Amino acid sequence: MGMSWVYSTAALFLLFAIVAGLLRILRGPTAADSMLAAQLFGTCGVAILLLLSKGLNLVALQDIALVFALLAALAAVAFAMRTWGRTD
Image (cartoon, rainbow, N blue to C red; front, side):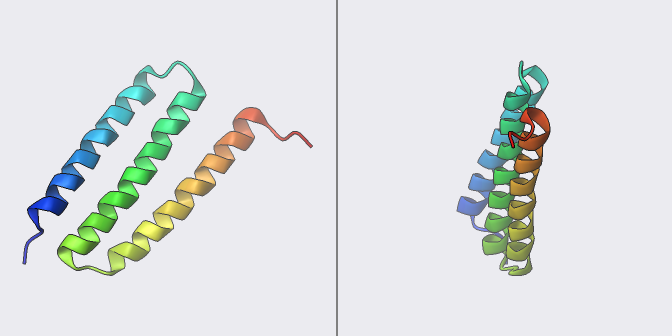
């Protein structure tokens, strides 16, 4: 059974958002711009995995999406600590 056109359209829209984020990374004047675009990759990647999970009826993709969400949060914290340093 194939994916619904709604899930496919939403996943395609999210892929376009990732392309827009890639352009921001390439043109971003500051490191913060690049980090926000990288966070966009993580968020869109998780959303795409959840859409695929629902559309293809693969529950394992939900677990993978959860791991990606946790890794994206850790990456943001690591970036902030490295860029702006600790204040204590």
